Structure formats: structure tokens, C-alpha cells
Length: 537
Image 1 (spheres, rainbow, N blue to C red):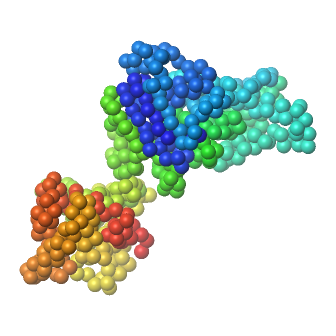
Image 2: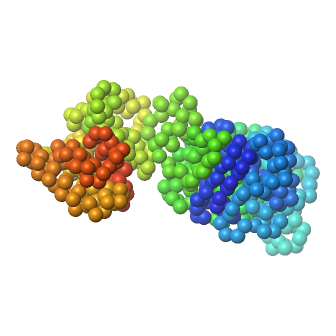
Image 3: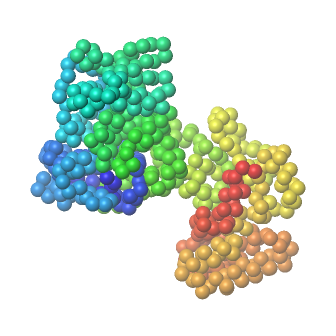
């Protein structure tokens, strides 16, 4: 089961919200945003939908589920509309199976079983009524595993298997997952369900380590792993929803548990989580890079639930990271540095005047989408780049060992020998072209500008404008490849020839706001800059 489109009206936080364009290939959907932005309201809608259609019970309390809609219970199907890829579930079983939902309040500190209970199908056993209920599942799943093993023994279908093989059928899978997440926390068995039934572990030199003695984070991770492995037998064509799976988990463990949950979900199912944690976001971004068609994000930052909202899968940009860090760390977010800092030429941000951080701003515009873990800083002229004279760079280097610093300067008139020497002796990378303007005003980019504004007929004239402007610059004594000296003339003439408006009030803003966004992955200029800045030399 895979979600395609969701629309909610007058439900919980929202007046009217639609999530659309969810790709069929998406196996993991991340809902990100601050507390109170409405992420959990989506899960409540799924709970209402499955409860009403699947006959599992639902909340009819208007004060809880509806927003200014006194007649909600009579028109609920108009206010909660969910579309799936493929055929929508059309029978009671598939409707019960469509969603499996965990609340954020997963806390079962201790349990010991001293008797067996008959456990029916998980499809007929909803544990929570709302997403604010305490979602205890460990003891229930214990009974489910033991009952399943007992049924196999007495059914006669497993006579050829030993007792250990029957017990290991489920316990073994859970143990393997726990080892992948924790390494040294080993599930050993279920104990005696008629005397002291519980989950027992081996940790270090300690044997028979009772579930109640696990840490909060260990219990939280075990709960999620146990639940998915136990429930995926019945929920095998399902959208799994977990509200804040990062609860009680430290950052590194958040990444491991997300990867494990992703691997445990059947391929024809979907995992939807809500989070604002750094660990989950970092791992999700890495997974998106590894599986670009299987991971997508919906961004609830700065969305007003009282307005009509239409959300599509969001791109992971530097700004999205900044917002996520701001929520997760509050005032400490500004102290969190990126994975990589590109030190380039340009007027530093701490100085006044025009064209502050010109090169850095251009590079941010070009690479923000695909290098969201990278930031750019202009520190002055090429000597300043080489010496890293700014105290900020030195401080960041000393405080954050993991940050990679890349120094990049214009080529100007340097020979290839000088370029090789700078890289070898100082680790400084040099652009192959004279300056950043040479990439921005390449013929290919000028052609793309003409096409973008619907003036493909003007391409020959615009290419000639560049050539004439460069010739005029050369006549003033400038080098033959000095596009920077000709950029002002090119800007003025292109603006007139293409009838451009609101394209930037100066050469620098024109290049930054109109031209830089045209350098996309399908252009030669982008690929050249990417290779020269990011690729290993």
C-alpha cells in the first residue's frame, strides 16, 4: 500500500491541506517541522480513516477531531480524502490493513507474564484510540510471539522442527536487528511464560538481563523493532506510521534505528515518520542520496494551518537544514557548522559596502540543492584565501575536527605550473577559467536565458552581445578571457535585448539572482564548477 494524495478539511489543526505528488516508489516519507505544525494531525486522519472504514472504532468527539465543523461526523468522508497508488482498498480486511500507526507515547517500563492469553489477529486488535494515548505494545507482542510458537507446536504443521527452531523463527530476526543497532545487546529468549515470561538479554558479562533493566533508549528501539517484526505478518500491504520514532534515542542511535526500520518494512509497504531530530534528518538525507526515488520529505516549517495549504515533496536545501537545526537546538543551532566549508574570494561578510560575499552567494545559489551539507564563505582576495586569515576559519577548524575546508581561487593569469604548485604545496584549488563570471556568462548559459524568457529567436544576437562586449573590453587593454571586465556591458545589453524586468538592479544582482539559478546539473558550466570545487584532485 502506497500513499498518493492526502486532503484534509476542517480536521484537527488544518483548515484545508493537501499533500500531493507522493511518488509511487517512495518507501520512506519524512514529515519535518516544529511542534504544533500539524504532523501528528495527519496520523490522526489515517487513524480516523482506518477506524471508520475498517470497523476498528474511531473518535467521534468533535472537540478533538474537528476544526470549526460541528457536522464533521456526518460528512467526515468529504473531509478526509486519501488516495493510494493502484486500487484503493475495497474490502474490510484491506481497509484494516491499510494503516498501522504508533503514537509518540511509547512507554512500557516493565512487564512479567505468568500465564498465556489467547491472542487474535493483529488486524482486529487496535491498541490506541488516538495519537495522544499511551502506546504500550511490548507485553502484547510478547504474548503474540509465544502464542504463535505454541500454535505451531500444537498444530502439527511443524513437527519436523525442533523447539529451538520454532522459537528462533521470530526471536532470531529480532536478535539480528538488535545486534545491528546496538552491537552488544543480545536478545536471548522469552523466559518461561507460565512463570517469569519476559524478554531477556545478554549485555557484556551479564546474563539473563531482564527487559525492565534496559535503558530508556534501548527499550524504545527494542519496542519499535519488535513491533514491526511481529506485525508485518498481518500488516503486509500497509502504510506504517510512527510519530517521533526518535523519542528517547540519542543522535547516533536515531540514525541506526531509522535505517533498520526502513529495512524491516516490506517493499510494497510505506513508512511515514514525523520528526524534528538531527539524527533522523541526517540519516534520511543520506538515505535519499542512496535511494533518491524511495525517500521524500514534506516540510511543515513556516506553514499556517489556518490557510489553504498545498504541499509537495520538498528538496533538502541548506535553508531546510537551518530550520531543522533551529528547532532541534534552539539557540545552539548557529553553533552547528556544515560538513564542508568552501573558502573563496570576495568581500567578507563582516565588512560594509556593496557586493558582500559575491562569490560565496553565487556558489550557494548554484550548489545549495545538491550540496546541502556545504556552506561557502568569502574571505577577501586570493592571498586571504590562501592564508585563511579570518579568525572564524581558524576557530571552526579547532572546534570541529570533522569539518572539511576547501580553498578555491580564480585562475586569473596563472600558468598550469603555478596551479599544480598551489594544489601540491597549499592545497588550494584553482578554477580552470579566469573567474566565476566566465562560467556564469558562458554561451551555453546565455542561450538558456533566452529560452527561459521565451526569446529563443534572440540567441544569435545575445551571443554577439557577449562577443562585442568582450572585444570592447580587450580594446581597453584587458585580457582576452576577462569576462568579468565585460560583464557590466553584457548585463546592460542583454537586459535591453530580452526586455528583462525585475532581473536585478546591478550586474552583481543580475548574475546572482537571474543567471546563477540557470547553472543546473544538466549544464556544462555546473559540471565544470562541481568538478573543480568538489572532486578529489
